[in-house]
Length: 252
Image (tube, rainbow, N blue to C red; front, side):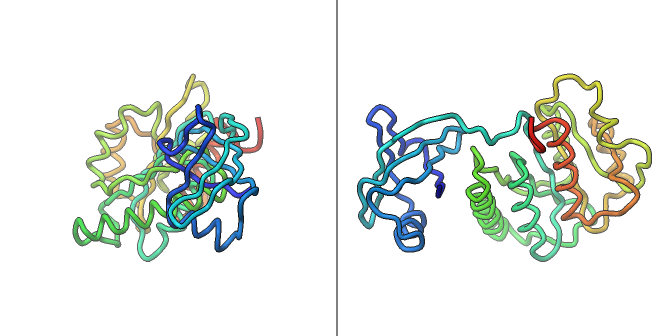
């Protein structure tokens, strides 16, 4: 069933009605999917609530739907994952966002670390990138039927992460010089982990100084094995292992 995200302000449960007024969604429903009155679609309120609805009205400005069924989303993991991703060059960030949203990441924070090749010129350039990355996150969330749309935060300097990791239960930082501590060893016997962070370096990796600084914040350097992974691979691999061990990847 085709799925769309709708702001909760446009969902009127007492009246049994949903209004779709995003032009992009209206065009997709009517011109691409060629759906019409009487067809069913699935709606999500971006807050883990889903609705099976029947289209009962279409015009150029909005599509009205009748709620047939309402139920909580079953597609969100039991853990919250925040990916702190050093900004890579070219369009690699697009792929990183798309695939990590699909696997279940809740939030992605672009990071400007010492060896980042890509640079954000000014605030205007940054906002355009964030808007584009957020659209990619939304499309990925729609495609894999997430119960939320992963949030893409504004870019931050590596040193600013100090203020962002304290409310997390654990923060892992893959580092090629770490040889003994893996993910399983890091999370075993750690109790009830609900919020976990992953800090990924750029193409050139983190400096030793950055790793030492992160350790002062309580972050754990980990190994992802004997092979050196690309920056666009490392976050997805780390998240996948965590989702398998602590979340819902591979079943309950």
